[in-house]
Image (tube, rainbow, N blue to C red; front, side, top):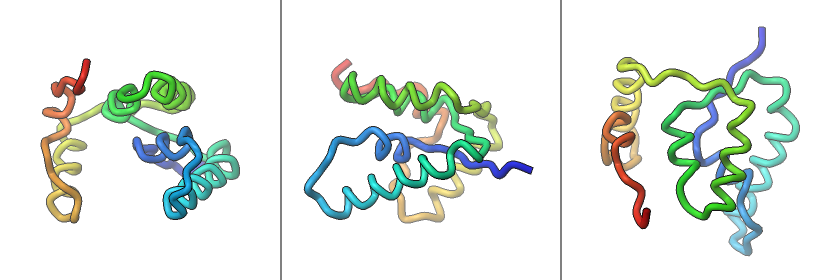
Length: 112
């Protein structure tokens, strides 16, 4: 059975990032790119419409690169159960909780 991995936006960001002098960021970029090169072809990769919406934001050239990476991934439906799970995860984490996944889908990007 093939292992599955959910690809979220930061993975796409590291895969398409420009070079940097920030050593921590450069290490994250390198590790992510090495992982992608070595493992992505042997895994079932999944993502969602929320990731696609996030990936489309920002610099148009970088956004295009991020969206191209999503082409070969399987998209999962955003179900109520998935949204509830995401909300619970954020409540129990140290990450900022700004809005629900459904609310996120209705937010207009800045500057557009």
